[in-house]
Length: 173
Image (cartoon, rainbow, N blue to C red; front, side, top):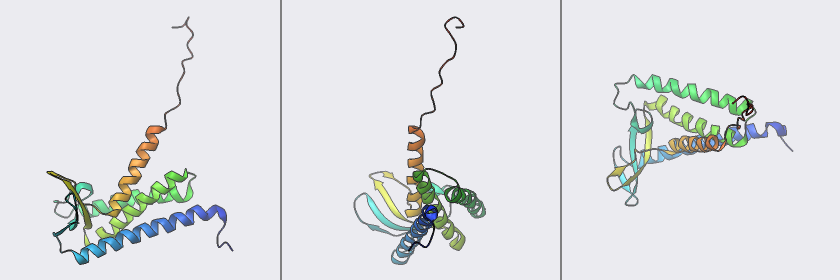
């Protein structure tokens, strides 16, 4: 027995996926925040650590050293992304891959927004490095967003605009 009409199924699945991804990100952030002291690291390999860091800024710790004004700005920007992407994914006819990538953006943005509203900072716990090169620490929500953007860029790159053919005759040229 179906509880919802088949046309609503992608929407229901989308909401379930977004909710599950938010839950997974919040669960992992809570786990690492409770098991690793703030600022400490657990070495996993010579190129990967688990850490417990708080990022008061945006991606790559942009604005992290600002004196507090960035929090309302970043909360507002989060809403400006999450709300329209959710509306498009729920109510517009879009390709399935675009809907799922939108789900990744909404899940990542919402989970980081929850952190930012609750504590003023986002918990980061994944740390990748190689010799002197060090990537800024991140979390699953950040990974969701980056994966979605990369897929969108690849889709747009592979969607070539229609070729415009000239209507000039040789006599006009």
